[in-house]
Picture 1 (cartoon, rainbow over the protein chains, first blue to last red):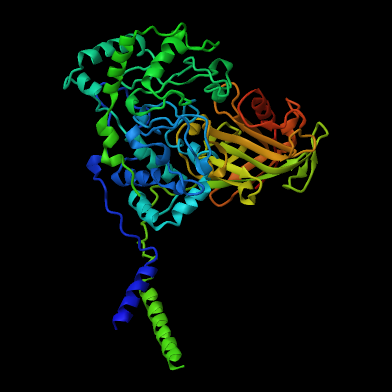
Picture 2: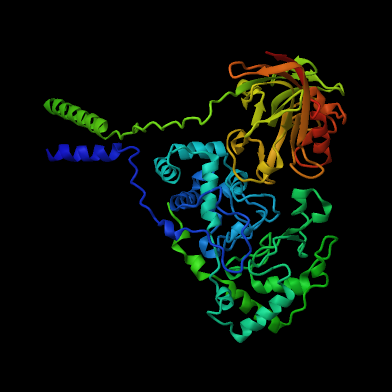
Length: 340
Length: 269
């Protein structure tokens, strides 16, 4: 009898086919809200046509961390977008895709993306909801077709549950996938750095940070505009790598050659390596580039002609200030952490 | 030998148990979904439909993919593997100028999908229509509005992933005149704004009115001639113009050409 029972038990386990363990609610509705920090501009993307819910966010979070979105099920969005690096890729000038293939550009951070007028270093992608199409279908990134993604997710018991919770039924389509990922990425808000607390009057800069901030306002903020620390325009900052024409690849306009989108400096302490091709590993190297490394070319940004003059003291003050943009709450927020 | 029999017997038991447990545990998949209540229309719907039949041809010869060969105006031989294009924002106009504009009016014509050659224009008010307006391509709004479904789903392979926007019209094939090692000819024509836009408006007059009523669906037979893509106003041949997959003067020229590809064959009431 004992044997029979154990056989029954084993067969039960073996055949409990799609009875996936129920996915418990991870967060409550109150924890997922659209945020527009005080003094910030109106975001470009809001959730008016993609109503934000805890279940939608959670589906997006599972998708973001699931390698099922890649052709050989090895690479997820989170493989190259790591939370502790503000969703950039630590230690990689260029990230690896499937089969160890390399792209051509550095993985950008993901934060405050609702304010982005366009995505990618060249601004080629015009909307948060079609943004994942780029990396998912790029042969050197995730190398997958959306047809396969829809088929794989439709066959998964786990995703049947997650889609049903988010949308009321288990139909999988590209729009539902993209809107869920947009809910996850779009609520990655970073606005709790020391800089923000100084601005709200809750903390104050050290004298060195204050001196760095003063320099920043004088010499950097026309492009790295507060409070998002970018103007999201496209500029040639004197790096000039002739293999990558940057913005011109999108517009076809020769006057856009070697221009790339100004990146936000929020969490910059954690997003190394730097620049569109990841060539600099330290903030010192970045500042040295602006002081003495600018390469002249016809499309060089007029503001950078002749470089930016900074003393050694200026540089360390600036770096002290830049570190006040680190938002530890964002980098460790459990709502964004890896999930499977 | 006895132990073999016993073990076989025991195996049988296990098997039976297995089967039983499977049938018990075989998770419930078909949960009963309560039928949704259909909303009653506020007013009695008196609108009808108009059906468009599209015949893709090359210089008068019906298009057949892969195997058939055609001759372009430059005397280049070619075959066609893919022909897809968007028709959107259909308007039907009467002689007196009344215009019906279909909402959510997006159709992807894909020659490999015979069903896609039949467009059913919906909610058309009863009237005698004498012309049609539509767009080849997808309007700029839908190019910048994020993820879409139906004809506009990126699954249809008509959306650029690296430079967001729809491919308005796509043709791929082969020509011995192509300098490509594989002899391919590829045209992905996009662009939704600016001077190189691939969107083109088409207006066509009917030889007789299309009489739409609630109970009668007239058929508009259209011809779409691929030959036109390479003739007017911008003559091209496959040895120089064989690979257009980005937005620029070449794609604009081709859009100017495909703007002329449609003609009305007949209106059948």
